Image (tube, rainbow over all chains, first blue to last red; front, side, top):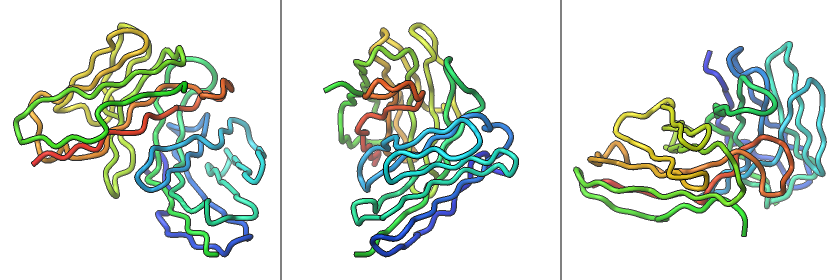
Length: 114
Length: 116
């Protein structure tokens, strides 16, 4: 199993719907997880981080972590055309302070249709 | 504005030429990273520096060297460029411009390198 896997998409959702992006991971990157948004031609931008089992909400974004099943997801409520981007999932074997390297999935391309 | 600054933004090299990509951050972060991003391959770590004075290889270090000049600056050097090094290069440091302790990376705007 690759360390972090994502469906490449594209995932198309209508405006106003909930977009659900999923990521699975291996034991090697099982502590901390991050979701990045990358617009075409731009650099990745951190939008969510999650370390503990359960849900974490920030505005229209909800990150969900299930360590038993080794998956992490990102829900985007009330999707807008401006949410159209590639979403990168990343994991690390470390938590808290200290240096570590993030391992990235290849990203899921999301298109929100007006 | 606080963040990670990369130069140049675009570069075309001939095979065998050398160049250095510059990266500087003003967020007082200890850790800095260099990634390359290729279509279908995602982001792959080239080198990283956990702190000033230390550097370590990542997933794809061959053909590259790095220097952590001081706490702010981390440069990536291509000694003899090859077409396989055509890519988008991102520098990153650990942290958030907002100051939140979320331990994520902040990326620079990227360098688009073409080797012909």
